[in-house]
Image (cartoon, rainbow, N blue to C red; front, top):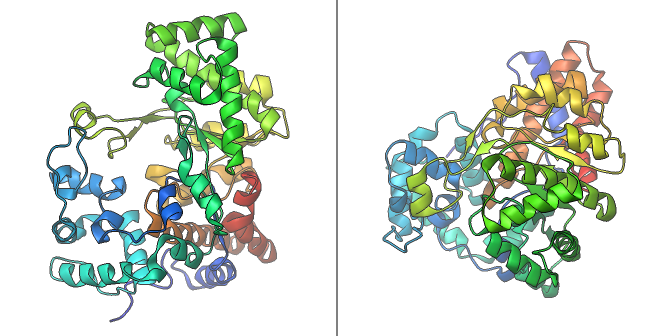
Length: 469
């Protein structure tokens, strides 16, 4: 069966530009993968057990997949997404897969379709188009592959040429899987990242109880302001023992504050009592970003800010299935005023790395590129989440390069739970960047020899450098 993958996919249509894009891509297509931010499950690499079945590998854990099916009225239960109350969900992987395959047309022209087709073909050798008619054959083919040792997580990690991958764990995580990986003697570089949202956000469920547990883990009285900050320092140091080079902060807004100790402590005590207003909770989160930045000056953790997602937009879905079930929606986000308190405090520190992402594309040329184009501490994260797509990546380069250049960006990160999509996502990013660079060459804005160097930087070096890997 012929390949479903066009070898010139995502390259420009005109012949001259396409030839340059091909030449650029040929030099970076097989570079090692640096995956500095993502959500793969560390227990995969710790236990190295076979993935259960194709549905549990491709469908049930991937909100990109099940949100599209949900949009067409397909119940999450029928896709195997677990309910909080333990109620019925489909457990038959073949039934889930056939439902998915019967609706595969929904993914036409989406990034998910490109990632899935790439994974089916390059990872599993499945070259037919998935449909209701081919569903059983595809399921059997992939299920058979999953029984083989070369399809275990560690073997795939090595086959994908992953040089380093960062998972993301809560500040309350004991990191037992990372400890198991380290003690196993396996050479794969799987590191953690410090995600303290549950003990930084007063509106997070169980905030006061989380802070109490946080203090116990850190050996501090985290109910006092000084003990709370000390607990963060201790936990950050613990995460660094397991390879962490970054912290990650998923706040509703990009707001930062630089409050006095008395103001911060007063807000903290209100947060513990559950009496913060929405404004006060936002102010506290904002102040903690500045505190985290100061800690980064001491321990060198890169500070990642992921704002602007209205998380868990559907109340009924949140109640039934919990967090991270595809109902996080982009919202308008201010950066110029929001980041100023943090940048006034630490923005000129050349040894600090603050990487900012956005779900509001309108801010790239107006706000983020000008900010990153002048403050030494600030870098732009790649096109993220809903814009981790060919068009989103192209728009990112077009709207940021003229003001911030290439070297105030940090390459690409895949930010995914879908393990087999990692090489597909990096391949898309590399192709889009090569297409953009080829266009710059043809229009006389970049010398061809420089384009080859930039392609390597965008595909590999900048991510490794920015995340201190």
